[in-house]
Length: 140
Image 1: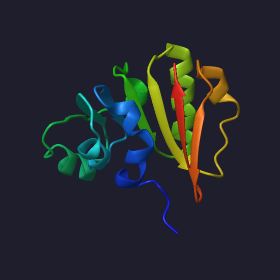
Image 2: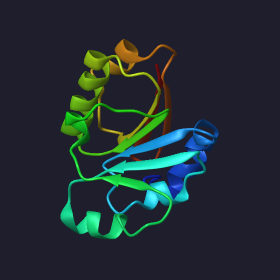
Image 3: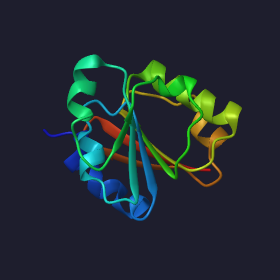
């Protein structure tokens, strides 16, 4: 069974949200998602040295070597596929700093949001599931 967690699998789920937008990948690893998304501009945050060495060689994107949880986030569409504890911190950051935009969060089906989706979203959150993977789409 294939779970939609690779850039090519997630891309069709979010294509309508990224076109003409400033896209920010929060934890971009090697920049694979940034490379494949149709958008106006591409920015990625990454702190892993091995990933940075590859991501910074990609053309047409800006890679920032900082922890996004400690930065003022700017963009239209934010994507994050990360560990559950990082996602929880991101939800709290969105709420505390009142960050506006569309947030696309990838996580396993076993992940629960403890009500944060409804708390921080201005529209009913959209959840796309396949296999044991979820993509949460939150608009603020």
